[in-house]
Image (cartoon, rainbow, N blue to C red):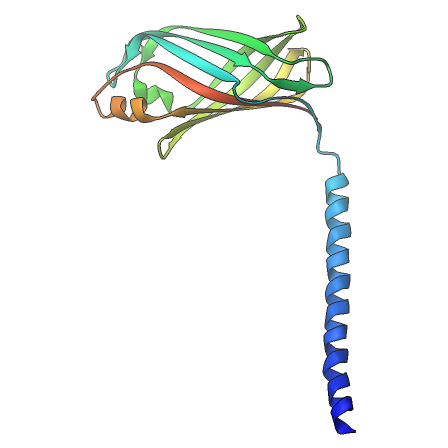
Amino acid sequence: MNQPTAFRRPFRNRLGALLTGACLSAAALVSASTAQAAPQGVLDLTCTPPSSSVTTYTPALTNTPQTVSSTVSYQFGPCLSSSGVTSGTAVLNNAPRQRSCLDLLGSASRTLNVTWNTGQTSTMSLNVSATVVGAVLQTVLTGTVTSGLFQGDAVLINQTAPAATILTCTAGLGTVPSLYSTVALEVTSL
């Protein structure tokens, strides 16, 4: 007779623990779904690789500062958007100035004018931050659309490029004539 009672107590204790755990899990799920329901913006546009950028330096960058001009050409697409945008292009011409390959790292600001396949345009005011992580140059551009399509939206651009030529250049063993980056773009309403 003692054996069934001894069996029932641990079972009740386990059952109580399971019910308590289930209640806590349910509370966590309700809390998480409530947090997700909070307005965090709507993704208005996303462009993924093979979206890309090509930056050309004239003359090629070295580890010694010299007067260099640069051109950055962006090809966005494929893109998904409820506004009908499926691709876009942008060209950024930078005036000649003193530069070296060490200038590729750090931060800067940039204005980018994008022309979409729909004929509409977006002007983006962006802050740029570039770092080398392992063998990759990671450039992150964040800011807002200041005019045109998606005006007022937040912008996030992630560019990834091989860092081999940059590392060789900073060591004084080569130059950087151009950089090819894969690009991911997100435009989110606030």
